[in-house]
Image (cartoon, rainbow, N blue to C red; front, side):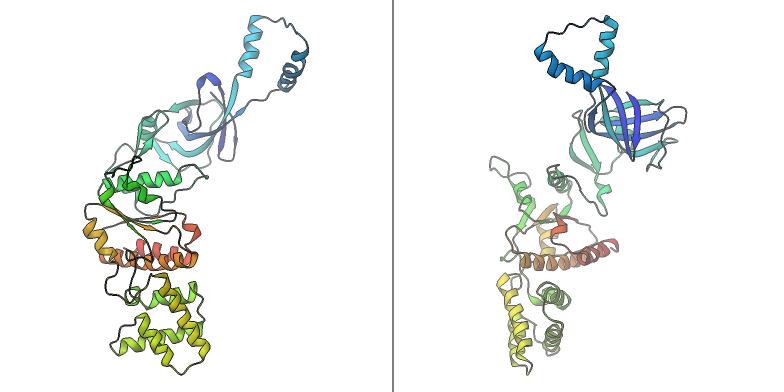
Length: 387
């Protein structure tokens, strides 16, 4: 293998097909004189193009179909021509730099073309990246050489984003991480857009999996996932009514006044109490209609109810799943407004859970860009960072 060219953060490496480079292979490009190197991984392959090769291919494709052409050349020349046609170019993306025995982010340095290029086994790459010493083993799959790939569960602290092209296995990796987090005794809340994660409770043959009792699936709008207005809180209700259901500012102010008036008189601000109070107010009918129509819509969603038995997420996580497990919030089939309301309530409940417990939980958010706005992200991230 020879280093041929560099474009941006991609290296072009000349190799013979018998060397068997595969997409996904890890490479160490080492400059022995500089005692520095680059870690890269193969992302694609190209044919090598040399002067006259296209003419040769055209001749073989067209002319040889019509005529029996005899070529005479020495054995050495034939081997040389065959060798050139067997060469390929691998594209490898630079990921890290190795310098003074340490692995660092790539500084932009590049070696000379006179380097050694070594294909790394999974174990070799793990040693270089110093990933062979772990506190909590989390199995995420197998490498190309069929070695088991582990990461340290402690490294999952903070914010992790799984990105990739469609069909590249993002959801599969997320489910693999969740499965092994649960097996290690961790707790998680999963916002599941397409009801993919509930399948972890059973095997393909329909039998219960080892995780059956460690995964609780909740469907917003049913008895499994509903709350009283007092449990949701005034601030969250204001966001739901104003930002999601587009209640005008003046009507939101009246709603807030009614809520506080009920509380000041020792009355619970239930949907019924708020609606009854609004109906008795001497205000413009358009304001009454705006408030009552939004509250009626909320009631029809089934997320906010005037009942005693509601969902206790804290108890579900830290009692029923005390040995590790996951709450799956199944959003599949919900209309967009109901989904946004459910997410808003859930975010507030997650914040409450994080504030009440010193024990951390993992939060998985599938396809978050489709239903979470920047403000919700900032709110959640800020709370997580300060706990």
